[in-house]
Length: 300
Image 1: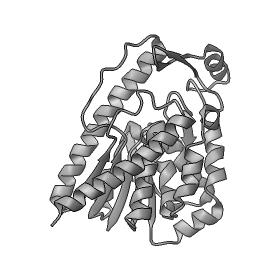
Image 2 (image 1 turned 90 degrees about the vertical axis):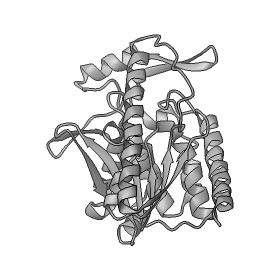
Image 3 (image 1 turned 90 degrees about the horizontal axis):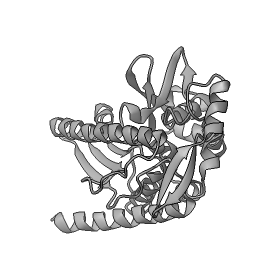
Image 4 (image 1 turned 180 degrees about the horizontal axis):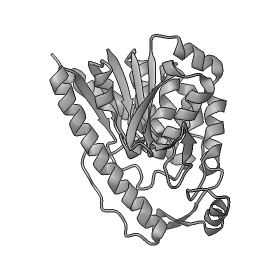
């Protein structure tokens, strides 16, 4: 069984889209299982439908307003990099409404429903392919994997949305008596789950460089500190997921091809810049082509 696994990474998902497009359109990879976390969950349904150009058009044209119904931060460019600060008005408004998070991402929920149609959903649901998204159950302290086979259209779209909700900056969702948030809070790279579901050949797109090439800029405010702390935590989770995935693959005689980003794309993946994301998509496509050529040269 062949699987495509895409990690979390916010706006860096554009790179994963480029990699996926090359693997599917040029190498003609026919995956049985598509497994995504956070931004990866937004991509996998469209990649499974082989609608790469459609998701490319959507993915590289979103901006902050496409995601946030109440954006909790402001973006300022200083010394050549983007710096975020608290949007006090938006945060206070959210707290007055009784919300538990700094911001809300209901616009993303609408965008998911607008881009993944019910007909596309049904085509996937009754196909041989399995589409699985990762979510974090905060109440039960567990990671859950939601398969398209188990849900109807509206509910599966909601699980995709939940998988992407980078709490506390985005929505916290109350569902089935539990609080749910971004799948990346528990599992950034669900390689082990792909192997548990029977995958023997895995292409894993990791939206991070293989080695750490930078030091984070000092935090300028409490918001910057929180994002740095979360990024540190997610980086550690990601590295552990990869190590566990490699161990599981060795025990099950599964093979993994890793596609790390060749350079640091951004230090803040909550910023959605159309121009940058178009560039990252092209970078992912080119990188996948170069890597496949290297693999072909190595293999006898």
